[in-house]
Length: 225
Ligand code: CTP
Ligand code: CA
Image (tube, rainbow, N blue to C red; front, side, top):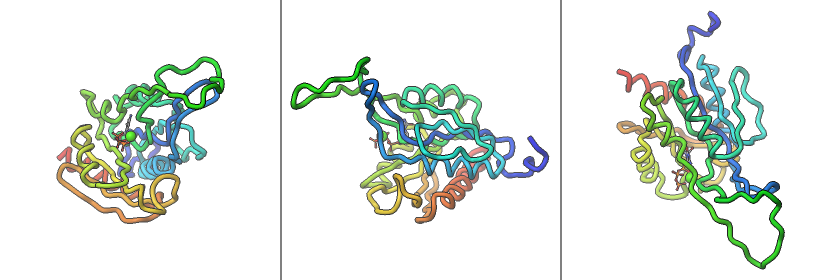
C-alpha cells in the first residue's frame, strides 16, 4: 500500500463488487440477458477505490472502462459469476451485489444453432444460484450488501430480501420511476439494514455511489462495534 493511500478511510479493506448483466446462452449465437448497463456497480467500485479500498469488479458484459486502480474479472453467465464470487469473497471485507443476475438459465444449451421450424417454440429454464445469498451464507462472510430493483411495494420486497438472504444491507430502487435505474445515468436508493433506513434521493450514479459507500462504511463500523 503506497504511503499516501494508508491515510484514506478504506485503506486495508478489500471490496468485491458484482456489476452488469449476465448472459445465458440459448445456442452458439443467441442468449437471454437484461438492460443492466453496469454503471451503478462501476461507480461504486470507483468510489470505494478513491477512498483507498482494494477493489475487484466481477463484471458481466458491459461497455464501460474499468475505473483506474480497480481489478476486473470478466464473466458472461450467472454460473461463472457465482463461481468467481464465491472464490473471491473468502478474502473480501465487503461484498456488494450490484449485478443484474439472470434468475434463470437455459436448461440445455444447444450445441448447434437452433433452426427455425414450428410457429411456436418453448425454452426450458432452470433457476440460477443466488450469488449474494450464497456469499452471505459463507462461514467467514464479508459485510454483504444487496440491491433490490422493484416496480412496486419497494420497501416490503427489499426488507424481505434483506432477511431472507441474510444480508447486512440492501439498497432498494424503484425501477418503474422514469429517469432512474436501469441504463440511466441517475438513480435514487433507499438503504435498509436491520436497524436503519436512509433515503438517498435522485442524483447522478457517481454521486450516489459515493453516498452509498459512505453508508456501507458507517454501518460496517457500527456492526463491528
Ligand atoms: N442476486 C444474486 N444472484 C441471483 C439473483 C440476484 O446475487 N441469482 C442479487 C442481485 O445482485 C441483488 C439481489 O440479489 O443484489 C436482489 O436481486 P433481485 O433480482 O432484486 O432479487 P431476486 O432474489 O432475484 O428476486 P426477484 O427477481 O424475484 O425480485
Ligand atoms: Ca432477480
